[in-house]
Length: 94
Length: 483
Image (tube, rainbow over all chains, first blue to last red; front, side, top):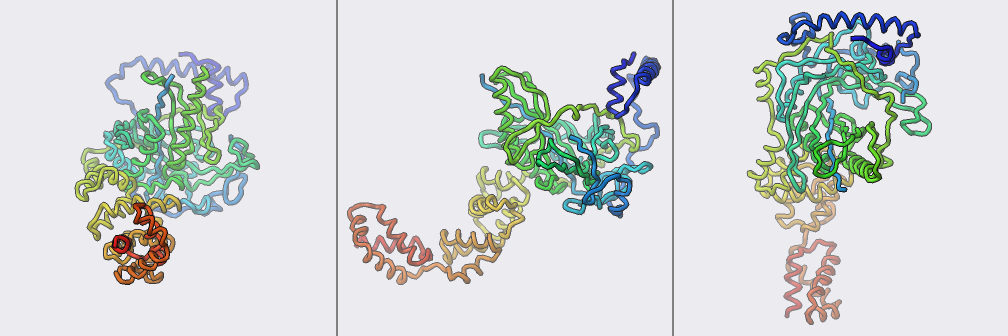
């Protein structure tokens, strides 16, 4: 299952990655190889096996509905490059 | 060509848990100072790990059971990836192909018919942060920059998706009302549409009547009231109809309801290309809802609106029309029942609730549990009418006053000297006066003009500031004139 340069560009856009032309070619080649390998595994008959989303046999890890202290606003915003009125200020997005 | 609307709804409900979905931050953040309810988990800081709030899972199953869904025995969370600054993680923890509840229905009563609306799924996720778009023009599409408040990020959010079974804006509104009432009875959400704890999006398309095929749909967002749901869908249906009648095609897009302008406007679509690359959330292990656990949840189900409606009809002898309106919100039903406990004539309680009370509530844009009138007020007023202290007409002005001030009817009656005049002699005196002062009207009545009597009754009421007992006035006037 070969991957095209267009696929790479699409995935790069979704991940907001700016790739050079050389990088796009390289990833097209590398990703195709990875998919080829995955394709080989896919040849196995797994029709009687449930999908494995998690490798550990652990289920139902819950917390009770109880509150705990929050961060102060100063701490919460300490990583923000720009702030206004107690909120994070960000470039326009629409 | 005649067209038929095909509507499916997506309803988001914030659960009223104490804490957020995956962390211990308080979930009661509405109206609080921005960014004062966050922690490393809901801010998505590296190294932090989410843990599932058990109560949120139980609430979701409870909703599913109330909507006649099947509860999945085995279910898990997925990661929904997208770049949008309302989530600090750049993904939302949601559910994908294994939601907690699947395949239910709600029966919706409208004026003309009862429609069974299918429920496709009910799933659990986390709410996003709140963006405020700052623009000089005030238009959402022309923002200069945005401000982010993460208080809401991580509040448990349930998404309820219907089948495209709804056929009109009225049905969409009735469905949402019914669903809201069910959720209120379950006590899993405060369902406050203005505060955004219940939000509604719709998929709308048209097709020629008789056709089974679905037309191109648009998604309408930002309908924050029942009025908006009806207005937005009516507008969107007309808009699509006009396009189809011109022989053009509807463009598949997301549109935003502009409540002030009464129109839907397109959101620029490029940024909304849906490619979420869902995958099982690696930070959370799967859930297994055992039969016993589901049964434990099932026994906590309260009486739901449909059953309550039937009980109102059977126990209180109310017509279906009354009962449907009284169960349209939990608070209405509770108000009614509290009155009916201390007042024997349930139908009269219902009449006053659907008449005066609803009228004033609508005018003031208040919910029944937000206004000054309590069941005690209404029952006291009805008893004052019964014992003849006030007439029905006077009661209406007392009602207005108690709605405004919250004073009990007895207090109002006393303060205003509103006690009804039932003294025969006193009324007879005034009747005599009116008859003497209006000889020509009296003549009219005697020559057969029945309507003239109404004028004379009105004069008596005017002279007594509406306090004379109307039945007595009628009787005494007729006696006097008949002689």
